[in-house]
Length: 297
Image 1 (cartoon, rainbow, N blue to C red):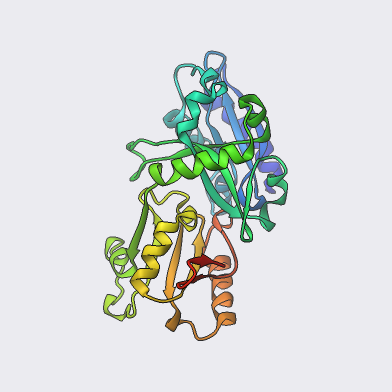
Image 2 (cartoon, helix red, strand yellow):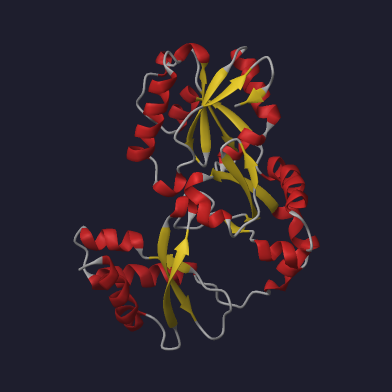
C-alpha cells in the first residue's frame, strides 16, 4: 500500500476505535528543514484543543509488518494518553503581557527553511536564522522518561496582534532564553558516562565538550550565549571549532584536533545524513570561535 493510500485508509478505519462524536482530519504540517508531515487531527465537540498525531512513523511500522488494525489500536491509545478532557481558554495568547515571559528563540538552517521563514519573524545570524517560540514546559508522565516540552512557533500575525516588532521580540527572547534554558558545558567523557556508553573515556584527550542547555531542548541556541562561548574558550585557552550536531546541541573541538577543515565538513555532512533525524539537522559545516576577538564565524 502506498503512503497516499495509507493516509486515506487510516482515518476511515480509525473511527471504529474512537467515540462516535469524534471527527478526524488529515492535514499537512510544515516542520523544520522543509519537511512536511501528515498530521491526524482528532477533535470532539466539547473540547477546543486536540492533539495532532503524525502518521509518517506509523506508515514505517506498516512497512515493517504491522497490520492496519494494530496501527489503529496504537493511534487510538496514543490519542487516549494525550487528549485533553476540558476546553482550554486560549484568549491569554492575545494578551502580550501574559506571554512575553515565555518567549524564547531557537536556531534553524536558513537554506533548508526558506518556505517557513516567509511565514515567521526571524533574525539572520551567520548562515542561520533565529526564530521565536512560546515555550510550554512539559511534565513527566508514565510514557516518557523525560519531560515532554513543547513550543508554539510565533508567526507574523502574532506580531500584528501584539503590536510589536521583530526587534522587540529578539531583545525579549535574548533575555528569556538563557533564563529559561541555562547553558551547559559538558565534557564528552562525562556525557558518555551518563549515557552508559562503553567508550574508553581516557581517549578523549585533549577534551571535547558538548554545549547545550539544561533541558537539552533546542540547545544549539547556546551559540547565542556569549558567556558560554567565552567559558568554553577559556577551557581551551585557544581558538576552537564547533560542530553543529543537531538543533539541540553543538560539540566543541580544540583547534589541535582538526588537521583538515575540508575533512571536518565532510564528517559533519556524513553524520547528518546517516545519524541525525532530518528535522533536527542544523548545518552541514563547522563554525569557528576566535579566542582573541571573541567572535564566532
